[in-house]
Length: 161
Image 1 (tube, rainbow, N blue to C red):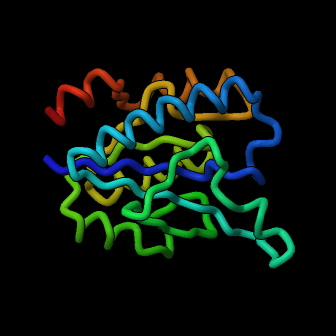
Image 2: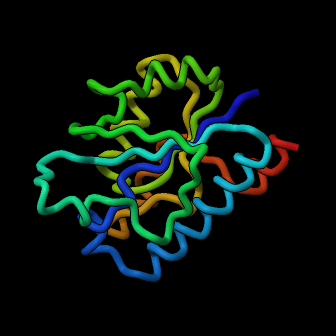
């Protein structure tokens, strides 16, 4: 089974209202899972929101330093909440032969959720990375988990061995 990890919108421009402790914790889980998947030749895809970006704002739209980005990772830029909408993400998932998408990043109630729904609408198997999603509203994360499929890093470890 081929796994793809989507790391969505973990950018300075979006995280100003999120507690640093929550960001650090999510980054730890995301980085652990991304390195585990890379080591077994699975796919890591960074999704970057560029909606409203001006040349003078470019630095704010970069992926934060807390997320490990490797040369082998793929990147998709988007202007809509659903990372599948008007991007090459669906094509990339199909070309990579990805059977399971693990979603992580920001924001649980917006781009992560809309991309999760976009994956399901396209017939992809999708799960949320437990402890790997962020929101500026802490009560939103449990609500997002409640009605969706989750995966924890020990299960990912078992899947890739």
